[in-house]
Every structure is written in structure tokens, then in C-alpha cells.
Length: 363
Image (cartoon, rainbow, N blue to C red; front, top):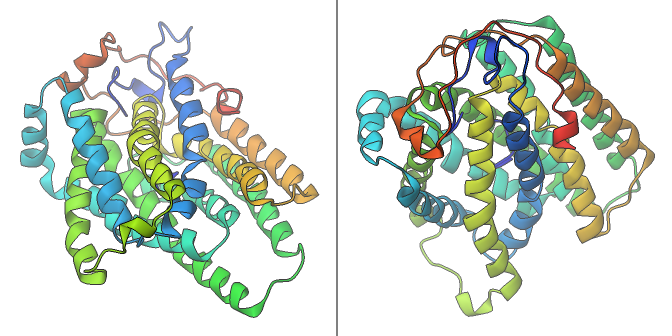
């Protein structure tokens, strides 16, 4: 989230027909996809709490420059063949610029300011609607074939987090100033969700053509460079760094070095083995964990609406995971040479089968 969630391939084998790789004659499931999803969900759920600590003391406009710029530089030595970055810019430079802009300056501008103004739980709840954005975009762009069964799963999970949100809104009153800040934060989160859903959709064809690590590295570096002029214009003077508490520095380091690269790398690895809308919908478990983090760190109450909404969200994840995956235009892409570092064998196209539920791995 904001790293976001969502949303939405990787340094592993290629995707098979119908989005279920790694099986032989359809008899085995590639469990690595669900390991990636589980890590993505758990690590991604911590983004909002860490961001909240950071933006209390550091200007939100500078956080993406540091976060994604450092993370991108750290990923460069991991690449087995850095020449793939040149190929990426040469063949898909425009699409990469769009993905980087959506991921860093646009999404983070909405996300971090929303995290500064509103409660952490709202960030997680709003990001749960990202799968619906991804689903509509992938259908519109013909990246996935429309599937009514999968749509019902997404709607069920979104309905679950809506129940949680309504229950939280009805749980006591707040001062007028806090209410106005929360409303503004919710409006910013709408922009954050739309931009993150767009990033997940745009990045998938890049991942399938060039591999997860090259695309992730280029997106981080280019996105940070795009955000740098905006940061200089919006906040030309940095705050007095001596006034920043150690907790904020630790949160920034963890978010930059651990959460950002690992979370999005797991997301990209999963997207090479599952449809983009599936990966985004599995991430609907993250809001539940985000609310739990809020209860632990910020004293938020566990209400009946959280239990009911959480159950409905997990049911939607289960329903979507059991639906038949739909072939996409990138289903038969060969495995990128840049992904050989992961030392995984190429995956052969096979007939599509129903994808097992990701709820157990994500939970």
C-alpha cells in the first residue's frame, strides 16, 4: 500500500497460460506464488504505521525521494545483468515513466499526506478498494478476460472493509477539526488508490517483458528523480534534522531498506504467477492487519464490525482465489534473461486450472 499496498511478476519463472505457472499437467500448484503473497501482505500492512511516524516530523514531499531513491540504488547491485535496464528504457521508456510517476510522486503525494492527516486504519481500509480499480483497468485494457465470479469476490472483500470503516465511523464522536482532517485524508486516499491501481496495471506488462527486479529498480530510481523537483519546489528548506526523534529515523530506515524493496519485490514475484487482480485482491488482508497494528500501536479498539468485516474480506479473497484465472496477452511471454539470477527453471505453458485460495498463505 502506498507502497503501498497495493496492488500490484518477478525474478522467477514465467507465467503460464491462465496465470497458474509451475504445474505439470495441472497437477501441482506453485506454492511460491502464495509465499510471495503472504510476505507481501504481512510486510505491506506495516507501511501505514511506519509512514505515520515519519510524516509527523519529516516533510511528506521529501520522504519518497529518500525512500525510493535509496531503495532503488540498493537494488542495482542485485541485478544479474544491468544492461537490461538500458533495454528497458529503450523499448518501454514511456511506459516506465508512467509507472514511475504513478508509483512515486503521484501515489506517495496522496498517500503520505493522507497518513499525516487521517487515522492509520482509514489508509488500510481505502486501499482495500484497489483490487476493484485494478480489475476494471485490466478488463478495459484487455490485459485480463472479464470474469464475473472474480468480480463477486472483489466486491465481497471490499464490502467487508466497508463494514469495518462504517463501524469505525460510528464508534464515538470527534472534534470538528479532527473530522475535517479525516475527510480531507479520505479524499486524498481516493487519489492514492486510483494511482496505485494504475501503477499495478501499468507495471505488469513491463514485469512480464523485462523481469521484476529490473522493473522495480528502474521504477524506484526514475520515480525518485521525478519527485525530486517537486520536493525542491514544495519544500526548498529541510527541517532541522537534530529535532527529528530517533523513532522517526528508525521508521524511515526500516521503510526504505526493508519494507519498500521487499514488499514490492514480493508483489512483483507474485504477479508473474497470478493475475494482477488476484494479487491485488489477496492484498485485502493487509487492511485487517493494519487495523490490528493500529490497535496495538495507537490503542484503537477491536469492534464487532472489525470481526464481521474481516470475515467477509477473507471470504472474498477465498472466492477470488478459487475462480478460474483468465489468460492475458502476456501469458506466453518467455522468461526474461535478467531473472536468471533467481536460479529458477523456466516454466512451460500449460492448460489453465483453478487457482487455490491465497487466504491461508496470506493469513
